[in-house]
Image (cartoon, rainbow, N blue to C red; front, top):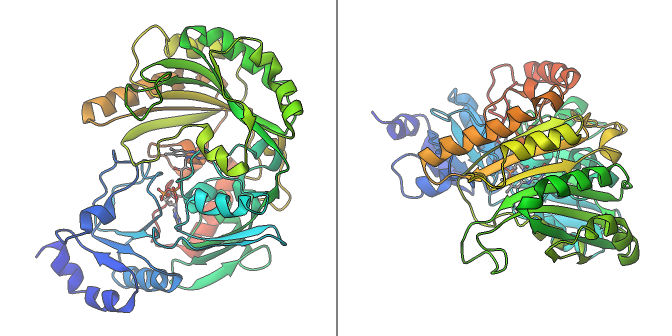
Length: 457
Ligand SMILES: Cc1cc2nc3c(=O)[nH]c(=O)nc-3n(C[C@H](O)[C@H](O)[C@H](O)COP(=O)(O)OP(=O)(O)OC[C@H]3O[C@@H](n4cnc5c(N)ncnc54)[C@H](O)[C@@H]3O)c2cc1C
């Protein structure tokens, strides 16, 4: 008997009949498409995929899984599929088609269904002069990103996206749909905000912020100037106000037609930054870096939704490997170590090595915040490479590891939840006190470990 027959024997037809969405099992048309994550390097082979159409579908799917002793992996886009454990015998519960978003301009809030991606929120919010705390990529999922903290271009001013969540609707591992906020199910509400959550989220509500002006862009320098530019950038980060969020980056662009001609097939050291405020203030803020004489300078006044293009993230699914590390500092010795290991003159299989400036509001505990109330690190290192073959995947992993290892002296005691792309327990991606509280909440609400989260508790 194959797994399809086994599950069919356990009421799969009843589940199909009960939900508006779709159900796929191995061997069935549509299964391969439904199981495919945005990160194409991850080959997910669950026993069943439920493509939920509504919160009611999620309830039915969770109850079906519980009744059949099946574990559940909630997933929106699959951008964060890298760290997931193998899904053999499990249900992949996708929320991809649950993308409704409601903006309340007067209350300055948004409600996004679990499958919404950031551009579903940033574009309509921008029409009211409001910004959401989105990340670098417009098609990363709001839910997965926020459950893991959420670092974006406005974070030094407004903090982690997770700490701007005002309510979460979720289906508990027991199959009950609940609304959680500061006054209702406070433990579940806390766990959703940066702890990966306990249960399957069906919608999030979050604060939006008025953005009067935004001066943002990139400075491109030949990669041979890596050391000089990174040293200057790091010194500059010590001087900027919370309104400025930036990163220093090494970028190797592929020789593909999608890459604009002046950049195609070339490697750069870059500074990317977003400055809240008017053009004169922004130009003044970045002037020390501009004086270094970049080869290209894209800084301009931008509407907030355009921040989704600043980092030039790929807009189509692709295979990649990556990892990150929180750094307490990024001093001269760390820069030299990074440049030595990501040698600009040597060939590399990496696509991007970036160091994001943290601090500001991220360093101050958010009042009533969640599982990541603040980030006790001043910089975040993230290294990634595209990996279309298994050989290349191994080479990228090795190089990512080498970059991480080179900066070990500056690692803080845990990694950033969202950038840990390889399997890691939640204890490795959360502050110790948060992990202890999360363990208790998980034991109370999900003693059987029904929910598979990105980083297991
Ligand atoms: C190109 C790219 C750019 C990125 N940029 C940033 C960035 O700027 N800032 C940043 O902080 N991170 C960034 N990330 C990391 C990203 O935030 C994580 O990969 C995140 O997990 C993606 O969320 P998702 O919903 O798109 O992914 P998914 O893979 O769908 O979800 C990731 C995990 O979130 C949980 N989850 C998702 N949906 C639900 C649900 N409905 N209920 C319960 N749990 C759920 C699950 O544990 C799931 O395994 C980036 C990643 C990529 C690939």
